[in-house]
Image (cartoon, rainbow, N blue to C red; front, side, top):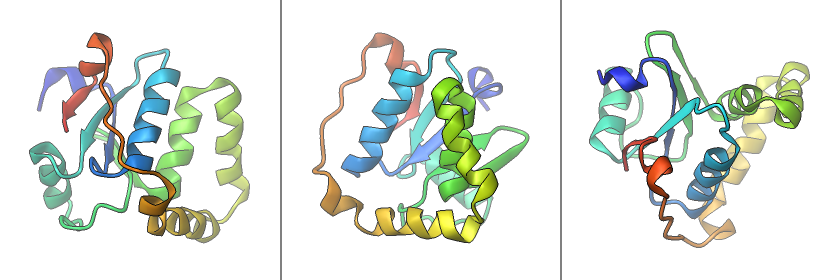
Length: 138
C-alpha cells in the first residue's frame, strides 16, 4: 500500500456520477487539514478495495470512506463521518447521525443515490496541482 495514504481517509466514489463529482469537489475545497484522498470505485484501486472486502464490484451507487488498517464506512455513515472530520460548522451535521437511526439516514441516502443521475449532469472536473495529489486513481 502506498505510504502516503496510510494516515489519510480515502473516499471511494462513482467516477461517472455528476453528483458524486460535485461532492468530491466540495470535500476538496473544505479539506483544510489535508485529511482526504480520493479514488473512483471503477479504478483498479477501487475495485481492489471492493473485492478484498467482498463488496459489490459492478454497482457504484454507494460511497465508501476507508481509514486504512482501521475501518470503512458506507452510505450515510460515511457522509456523516466526513462532515465530522471536516470539523467546524460541518461537524454539526455529523450530530444528525448521532440522533438519527441509521436506517432513516440510509433511506435518505438511498433516495438521493437512486435519483443522482437525474439531479446533476456529468461534469468534467479539472483539479488543480495540489488537488491532483489527493487522487489515487480515477
